[in-house]
Length: 394
Image (cartoon, rainbow, N blue to C red):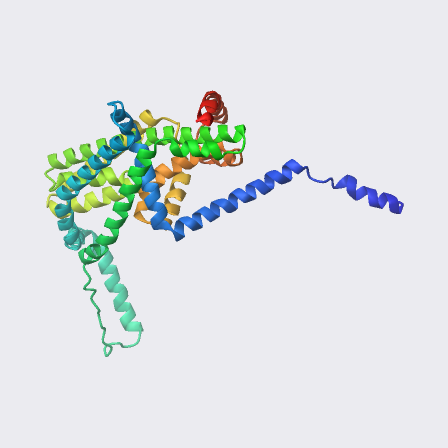
């Protein structure tokens, strides 16, 4: 083999990768780095971003109501102000009605938990006997520690004091969220028009309009549907608790309504809380078990029959992805992150559906078939492309 052949063979056996493949790899790497940067930003500026997300989701929820009021020939700013004032009035009314019962239950929570532990004392008797036998063997074989003295430090902190100390900061965040909500509602489609104007080409304008309108429509429909379902579950729970003679039945219905925004986790926490309430309130074992059992039956009907029937497979997500998503946002934003995880996951899935580089992620986290997805996406893209020149001209 000559030197010339040696120089030719490596070029033949190891061809250069196509430019499109290399660009696709670079694009995926940039997307991954962007996702990591967004996660880091959400952790570092959690209060600001969480406030913006809350206001944005509320604007998507109440934007149709603003449109209905606008049909009465009122300016959008005035319609938005009416909706925001109504939200504030409902929030203050609910807070006034539920604040005192919630405060009493929080103050009595340690006693309630101790009462439940006493109810299960007979079940723990064999375990305690085994622990005593093990301790006796340890005393016989181990060194004598009778001369040592244990010092027990009791924590005298009151959770209500910590709650009162953080109230001013919470009120500041609530005020900021309300102001942002008003601006989001009053702006309407102005932000979308600005995005269309700064997009460089017609293809980018179509993509921006497609993603923005689909996110707004799907998220608004999702939030309205989930809110109505959770409200119905909360009302059913309150009625069931009232029939079971549980004190403050409306409080537990409101708790179920709020916690049910967190998939799986919210229902579990509600069941645990209601079990504690049942065993600490009623002496009869059957009556105490009926409290969490009634909620579990209602939650099963909601999760297995009502929600799949109404929402269908459009926003169906792999349960493993849901748990990972809850863990992520719960770590970043705490309780608020867990409550916002469901709407944020639906929004992220819609974005992945309309972004070519994120399409594999959309297929991974969802349960819809690829042909159904392609057909739906093509239909939306064709419908939006007809409206794009009008939106661009504005």
